Amino acid sequence: GASDYSGPLDKDPAFVETFIRFWSSFAKHLSRHDPEWLFLEPMNEPVFQGHVEQWPPLQERLLKAIRENAPRHTLLATSAHWSNLETFLQLKPLDDPNLVYNFHYYSPFFFTHQGATWSSDNVKSMRDIPYPSTPENVQKAMAAMEDEALRKEIQQYGEERWNAERIDADIQKAAEWGKKFNVRITCNEFGAYNRRAAEPDRVQWTNDLRIACEKYDIGWTIWDIAGSFGALRREDGRLTISPGMAEALGLKSPGRK
Image: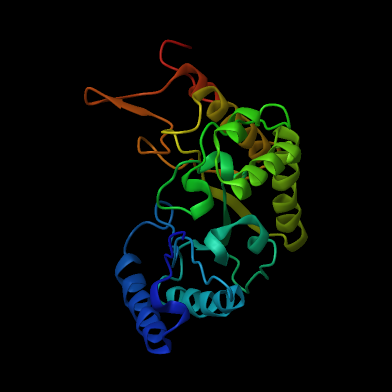
């Protein structure tokens, strides 16, 4: 199964109290640092699989405990189920004007996480999953897949026609949520597994998502720098970025002015 980063938070009330006390103390320690340079987020990708409704009230308690001891710092709020967009859109804003609400974006998951051994079982064996997707360009991946159920999932992925327009529609939903409640939002994680996803497709997906975020004035952060989802490559102790990925991120690649 997929990684669960919540630990015993959704199962052990005593641990919940310990976690809140930890954050209260930690926030006091961190409050000495410049609020312009340090934002505080109580948990990265809370999961709460099967009972996501438990996370928002716990997050509210955590943020209040942090706020009491870090009154000037910007705090980050997110949703359960790995901060995905669906649960993010179900959040109700809290009574704190110095919050930024963040979601993570890894759709379509078959493309971004194909071959990721730590992820959900159905993506571990995925190979040659293209982006954008069409019924025609998924045929190679379908032909190589022995498992009938997974073959059907790939076929459906092709029929869903993931492309820039579909990503734009998702990001627009996030933007409309932020506008509805007049709150600041950001996409502080997105990326595609560079050990399996074809580089031209990964560049295209990155480009489409970055452009959508900027179209709707949503801040963004790619995951990660030079790891398995990295925008950069580490070669002979040096970090390099391909011209394609630099352009996809709206950056100036080496040698360009």
